Amino acid sequence: MKKLITPYCEDFGKSNVVIKHFPDAESYVLIPEIETLKNEKVTVYHRLYPEPDKRIFELLLILSKLKQETKHIELFAPYLPYGRQDKENKPGEAVSADVLCELLKSFGITKLITYDCHFLPKPGNFARVGLEIENRSAGPQLFAYAKKYFAENNADEEFVVISPDEGSSYFIENAKGDQAGQGYSLKKVRSESKASGEETGIHADIHTMEGEIDVEGKNVCILDDIISTGGTIVRALEHLKSRGAKKIIVGATHGVFAGHRIAEKILNNSCSELFITNAILVKDASFDTMVEILELPKI
Ligand code: R5P
Image (cartoon, rainbow, N blue to C red; front, side, top):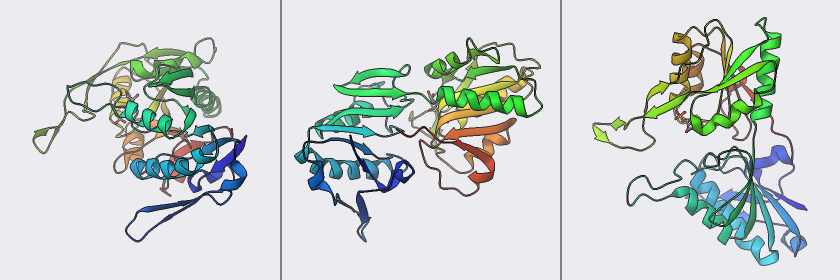
């Protein structure tokens, strides 16, 4: 299997794709070794976030050349953007998850390898609009980090693992059967958000967190697939703290961090440790001290 690594994935190997930007910000792509890829099996390593629209278009430019050479193209994209709009909630709403999968398939991707894809219920092999998807999970890695944290930080070793909503409930499976942890799910109830007096309904604010879990005097680890605005995690922290949780730590696969000082907001709300993976590369230097970043295995 040959590797085509974009500059956004250099932590997975030396980049062999040139991506530049014209003065007007349009993208330019060159695959210098294109002739060596004829009829080869190729895995493209590319991060699709931040700047998802731009990164998706750059990927299409890469694929436009690659698909002329070979029919065996896999994509490794550790975070799949546009995964949260995965159904038509209102008539006329575009289903971006389907559009992106269709686009990847039509540009020659035979298989997508990703982590904790939002619209998939668990790790494993799936298909969406005909695109084959291998969904890996960082859950075991996040759980192992939590176990080590509680063992090393003078906390009792036992802790409760909690997913803040049912969509990410498979994360608690890591705790089941392990003597260090028990797992439970909260239920997130959303309400429409208001922005500048207008009803937006887009990724609406979280209204309430429901679920009575006995966390009184216990250590807790919250695990989720994505931290975006941080609203879900902050509500979960408030909910668990008000029910007497002792030490709470938070882990997530994808640190989207959409907004300012999201990590601080979480850490200032009774969170003792915040850890994410490098599925998304966070370029904020202050993160070095605030957030623990776990490296995904090299594929
Ligand atoms: C939602 O269903 C996901 O599992 C995450 O909980 C959600 O995407 C996090 O978003 P935010 O940080 O904006 O609350």
